[in-house]
Image (cartoon, rainbow, N blue to C red):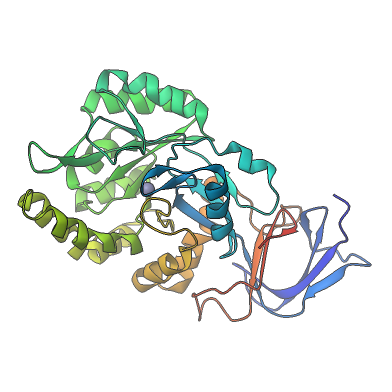
Length: 357
Ligand SMILES: [Zn+2]
């Protein structure tokens, strides 16, 4: 890259302290003064680029979207400051987005792995338990180091949430993913699936609304991460209302999980579970909605916790560098102290030294 070096002056987070000077040369951060740099920021707070740790690019409510829509989704995310997306399952291969400048880096999970009639139609591959190991291996190779299982969903015969997979099948599938160099995560709404999957050696849990005390402690002990998609859980009462007449037990269960969502998350926080910010954008939720998730997390653990969950701690978890000497210049700048105003309104979003937006 031969772009002119850039210079920013501001408080660099998470360290904070006095404002400092940061330069961007050939897409990388340096704190060594550079002559002839163009100053683009003279005051503000400089944060490592935001991470949406549960996002679906290439997916909308009806299933797969076309390329133009997938690109728009990624653009809607980047303008809010998201420079890294952990894709939690997409029906289309979005690797071609890597070639477009100024978009977030996407860390993919391949397609959701579900069973026939046990998830939203058109979202995932639908297989039976005896195919789970092979499919997990296939999706591990299709993604960028993650596999996404659907851990539970309504069983219409029983009228309630139940796990999709037998214990032995998930244990073998997680092992197969690990052997292929991928980590595994799963959609878990209820109590049973999350207990089963944590016991089977899973690396991360999505939603996790059914976490009880024992499984919470086990997650903390094993270092299993949680992406609660807290703000998006507000769809639960609507799901319950729709299901009420046909599946009253399921409806009551969903309402109960919703009502205790803050308590569940608070217990995870107190137990030391690693918690990250994710929107669940791409199904029914719009892209570009990480800020409401940050604010929801801040209600539980404060602004510093929420910002770490959406930036520096999430980047550490996913192997994306923070703003150290020589790191890719993945950053945002805001005009007000984010520890006081976590409703971030970025004035600059930069990925690999390219100003996005
Ligand atoms: Zn999702």
